[in-house]
Image (tube, rainbow, N blue to C red):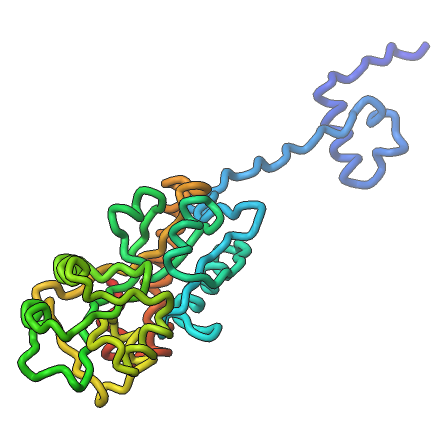
Length: 293
């Protein structure tokens, strides 16, 4: 008689199946029949770091409407600093931009209505901050530009106001800057302001003698005038400069959206991109004075 055959414990069978499987024999032997391949643990996806998740601006499903206006070196005849900065914002954000050129005053109306989303080189007045978020990115300073026929005794707003034959030209929709608010208001009260629709027309009429002075920043007036043909003076030496801003309409962009665009703009400032773009239009020393740290 044969001795009774004892069944090996499950642990022994498992060990045998592992050895046979390693030798490539398991598929044909009974010891492996009840040994199903155990699923291997799958690696768990690692959470994306917060700095990478949604770090940049969120792009809307439609193109961002970007308002440009004729303003010397900022934008003129299809090129300029505003266009350069906008194109870099588009490239780095991955958002689609649609550019619309219009008068400055109309840009404010369109932003309030939600038909223009962004614009550049804007002073963040209290009125504009009602309908737009403001992101500063450059320094600007308005100078007074006087025609050659203006007397050598005119060196201040008070001198100008005291000379009844002198008039000031302004581009409609442009903000003259805080130090000139009272000066412009006084001239307006005595009907000695000429408001012109575009910057191009403003400087053409100034050169033709229609008025004797204009206010302008270097990046603007340098595109229309030769400095040896005019007298340029600083009538607000106590105020070194004012911030130029990227304005973003509150109609379609939240405060957090604006913050993300601000982070992107700061990166462009920090890596030197903004300064290199300004240097396309001004000498390096003048460009450096416009750049924010």
